[in-house]
Amino acid sequence: MAGTTDSSAVREWVEQSGLIFSGIVEREDDATMSSVPADAGTAVVRVERVLKAPEILTGLVGKELTLLPAAGSSLTVGERAVFFTRSWLYGESLAVIEVGRLERGAELDTTELDEVRGVIDEADRGVADERFQERLRQAEVVVAARVRETHPLQREQAGPFSEHDPEWWEAVLEVGSVEKGQPEKLLTVLFPSSTDEFWIDSPKLAPGMEAVFVLHRNQTERGFPVLRVPGLTALSPLDVQPAEALPRVRTMLDGIR
Image (tube, rainbow, N blue to C red):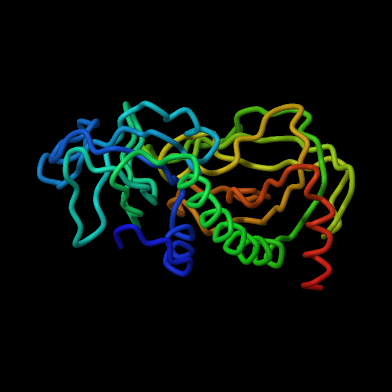
């Protein structure tokens, strides 16, 4: 894989990745988190540039994280690469699992960085379009709306304790336009406030947010069944699109009707 920018390989990595960054290996057989086993085979990598990340992780430049190399690969101190990773653990630091790597002998210069970003962006757009179209197909409701308020979900009975508890909140949406379904002018949507690894990339709604919301009823896709609650949710990063994406959303909906 060293040095390759094969688009089919990168597309596959992008599809599996939540965090893509360039970095340098600082320490072998080490970790930045006490919860990572000493014999896990991880390395400590310092982030030099972030190429793709959930909003909550955009401030990683200059920080160290724990990386578990892909099966059959290894890392050596001083090695620089673009790492394609998925989440593993989140706490006092961050631990990720590698799904692919573009190896580089030195820090990326502007030309190389633009090349890599171009390949990632192209692959990401293709993957995102396919995924987003499927999210639209599965959705019960699609609306352009503004978040009026948010508050913790009040439950009659607390669920079992789990470190992966989504910590459900409710958001009240003021609907501006209805693109799919027949919702009321005010909608209540559930979202996980937790930054646990299960939920770190799920949208966190906030008062005043204006967006296109792709909503699903009584989700079964994430989290332990005992911690799920009935209602409309937007759990994938694709389920909350910027307001200016509305024309694109309408075009894609027209294509699946």
